[in-house]
View (cartoon, rainbow, N blue to C red):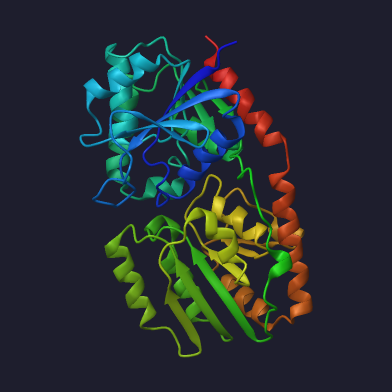
Length: 388
C-alpha cells in the first residue's frame, strides 16, 4: 500500500533551530512516523531572524532531511502560484499547518483553499502550537483579536480539524471556535534518540547554585521576570542565558535589569545552543529557570529533566505537580517571592540532597521518552484527520 502523503506547512524547519519548540515538534514527529507516512515539509529558506538563506538548500526543489522531504521557499514566501504548484503536484492526503497566525504559510494557503485555488477536498489539520493561550494572545493583542474576528466571519478555518496537545489547549481552541469545532488531542512527541545526563553531572557545591535559562529571548519566554526573581536571591548564584535574541527591544530591557543585579550574583549571556547539544549543555547546571507566559509543551523542559537538571517553571505549561514528583516546581507568576525562595532553597542544598532531585528528574524524563501513549495518540490523530 502506498504511503499516505502529509504536506506540512511550517514557519521554520531544519537546519534552522531558532524557532524552538515548533521545529522540534515536527522534527520528532517525522523521526517517529517517517516510515509510516510520507512527510513533505514546506518552509522558509532561512532561520528565524536571519537575512541570508541556508547554504546548500536550493529553492524550488525537494531536499531529503531526516525522514522528510523539505521544500525551501525563497521570498515572497506567500506566492499563490508556488503554493498552488506544490499542493497540486504533491496531491497530499492531508494538509497539516503548524501555526495559526503565519501569514505566508498558513493564512495564504487557507485563503487559496477558501477560493478553490487549491482543492477543498484535501483534509486540513492545524496545530496552533499554543497561540490561543492567554499569554500568547496578550502579546500584540488588538491585532490578533481583530484577525480572529475577521477569520471567523469569513469562515477561513471552517471544515478543518484542530490539533491540541492537551485538554487545556483544547479549551483555548473551543473558546474561539465553539463546542462544534473538530478538535483532536495528541501530545507532542519527545526526541526519538535521547541521552540522560544525571550520571555525569559535576557535584553541586553547598551555598552555591548554577542557574540556566535556555530559550528564545522574547517577551513570551519572560526572561525579565527571571532576572527580577534572581535579583532578590540572598545566596551566591550564577545564571547563564542561552538563546537567540528574537526581540532586540526586549533584550535591551533585560540588559537594564542586569545593571541592577547585586554583586553576589553573576549573570552571563552565552549565545545559542544547537538542538543536538542542549541536553549535554544542561548537565552543567543545577536548576533550569523558565517563568514562561505559556507553553503547549516545552521541549527544553523535557530536555532539562533528561539532563538531570530540576526545573523551576511558571504554571503556564503542561508540566504540573512537579514538587510531588521531586523534579521541580510550577509556580504562579503572581507569586514572585516563591521563585526567589526556591532558588535560595536549592542553593543551600548539600550535594547528596540535590542528587535525589537530579536523579528523579532524569528518571522522569527517561520514562516520558519511553512512553508509547504519545506515539499512539499522534498516529490516531493523523488517521482521524485524514478521514473524509
